[in-house]
Amino acid sequence: MRERNFTQQSRQGTLPKGQRGMALVFVLIMISIVFVIAAVSSRLVTLGERAARNDRDRQTAFQAAEAALSDAEIDIMGPNTAGNQRVAMFGELPAGEGCSNVNATRGYCGRLTPATTDATLLSVYKPIFANEDASTRQWAGFGEFTGREDDFPVSSSGALPVKVPRYIIEKSLVSFRNRSTTVGKPFDAFIITAIGYGLQPGTQVVLQAVISKPVPTN
Image 1 (tube, rainbow, N blue to C red):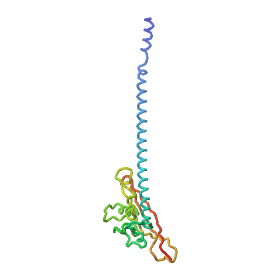
Image 2 (cartoon, rainbow, N blue to C red):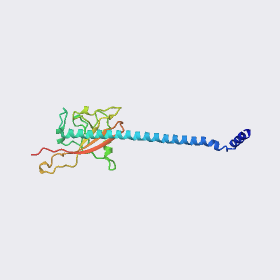
Image 3 (cartoon, rainbow, N blue to C red):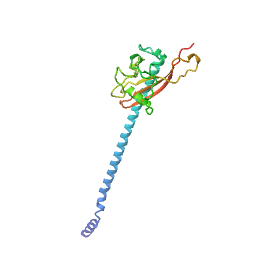
Image 4 (cartoon, rainbow, N blue to C red):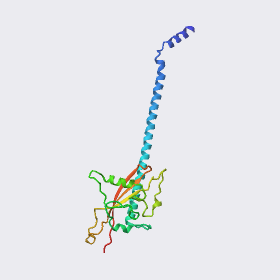
């Protein structure tokens, strides 16, 4: 019995020291791999959530700009029962080339053109929409001339746009009239430029549309 036990103890003592540490190394490698996978997964989830939030913000701004285009069309074409409606005003051309900041004609503009040949139209619209001064602003807000202000709620927090969408109406250099009875009368084509805001003030979408308004003829 003594001789056999001694033989077993001798065999165990002859195992290489490197083999006795492999289990610890293997466990450390597996833990490192798990940590890397967890970090990458967390990063992907964060990026996906951010992308979804940005897309929702942009969609909110896009829908707000579309609402402003619709409101401007009612402003031009009617039916409009608001006390300050100005449907008849669009039978006359605006004076000058700028945008009006007078209450009754606010946001009605002559054809806007860039100040320099290398400037873009966006550089013309941007300062107009950026003006927040109530007395000098040249844009019309959603519902301002259609009586629909309450149809577009806004909020500085939450899931609502941070600002009311805005628009301006320009006379167009293109007329859709092709009958001799209307030659020489005011233009009936209007360019609407609208801007909508998302959940953040920096999220903005600008849309344009052309509206043709028929003129009375015999």
